[in-house]
Image (cartoon, rainbow, N blue to C red; front, side):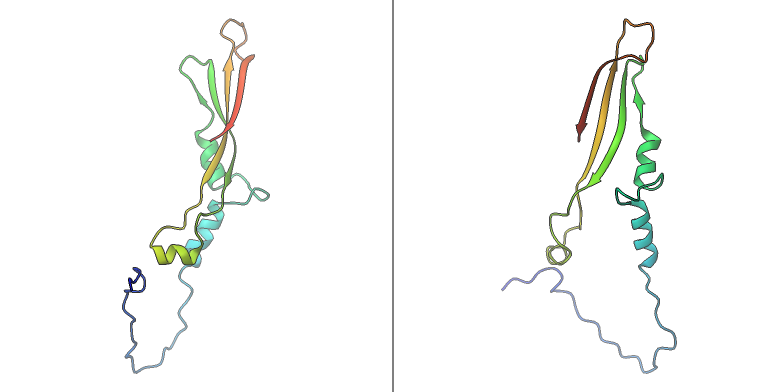
Amino acid sequence: MAYSFTEKKRLRKDFGKRPPILDVPYLLSMQIDSFKSFLYDAAGRGKSGLQEAFESVFPIVSYSGHVELQFVDYELGKPVFDVKECQLRGTTYAAPLRVTLRLVIYDKNSKKKTTPKEVKEQEV
């Protein structure tokens, strides 16, 4: 029978003779809170975290100024495997990130550069 990576790990025994004086704090709370503040739900999304990172990069304008790439929205999909399956396989608990972008092509012949010739919106 083949064992997975996590099943091969050794169990650790505590040979300490003194009882613990202080309770051990939950050390992952800082990382979990940081992760949750970085990835907001669509309803409570403000100008922080991943939303702020996308808005700081976009819009991207071409050198000539006739083409512009705009950020519209992002969405996190569901992970492929659940937590237990990822632990057994030794893989990461990853979820797909889908971003909706808008490509605006402005009319070169118009006097105003703000008149769009063509607009395409796509989820990437």
